[in-house]
Length: 92
Image (cartoon, rainbow, N blue to C red; front, side, top):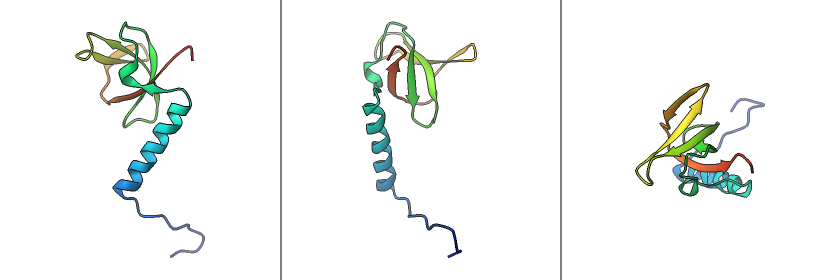
């Protein structure tokens, strides 16, 4: 072991899931809600998507549950390529 370098614990599926749950719980504490409860009327909201570290401008379009989460960025609009996990209204 090199001096001055901390050892890194081995990451397991279980430890990764525990970190994911901890992040989910903290975001819920900060006012985020499960995406299934997002507005279904075209209202824009903020979204957290699995596989991304950003907060995205999003809206649900179409009839639930067959519609799409649409992401808006830089004037573009496209179906979310990642699963939307959590949402928060802009006027939180």
